[in-house]
Image 1 (tube, helix red, strand yellow):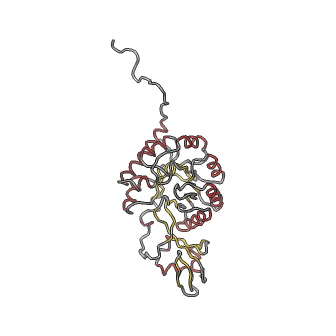
Image 2: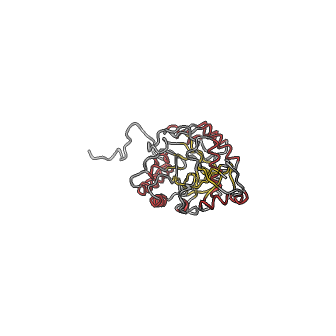
Image 3: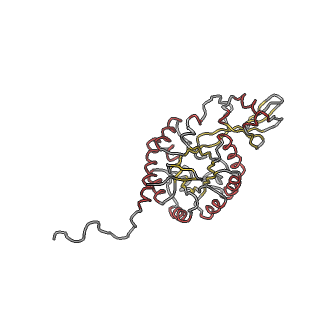
Length: 68
Length: 258
């Protein structure tokens, strides 16, 4: 099924949870934060949050920046 | 001796807060932060690049044990975006401090004070330590403080403009009138004398990014800014002489040969 991750259409398997998406991208999990449909998903809930068709996921991290 | 800068009950020896953006390399950034002897560094919150599989994280270069990381809401033009960004920032490092920016205009990057006030109220209620960037409006400052801001941060000039202190009078008024929370000049500092001038006015700290990162030699400028902030602070504490229109001789008036 299709979801949107950081603005990009992404195909994932049925029943995937957030942890699956994070792992498939290969990210260092303790340096990122995740939002699902504009709501924060706490790290402890990644494994139990199942994704649905059309879900919008934002995965962010810190970058250099004191200004825009 | 000067006491520490205290924000939300936390002590900082340095009165210089630095941004981490626009450096030509991580190496330069690390050296500049180090020589500046800052205690607090702002970072932005951005999408992870899904195509970049490298495990190198920006946080590999800024040690959270050495520096207090202050996430910001740079690039947010609405209350909603700023609040969402702050929530995400808190998730990354379990850190409830936020440098709050709600921008109202692309060219000037001046703050949208209305959105800023709203976001401050929401985030304070959520338990954040909120440090808002605003202009130099005393009334807005008072409203931000009433809303629970932990400090107020007026700009000296547009972000990244390097124009230096453009609003001396308003900053002086703010300094006299704002006593409940630290007053930190944020934005527009271009060189060491700008930083020194801000501190001579008696503000509690200075936040800058471009002034250092954009200099020809950022590491040298970082040192200059550190010294500028210290010099300004010492001069302020020392109590300067008054300004007089006419001369006032330094040597005795009597006993000169004739």
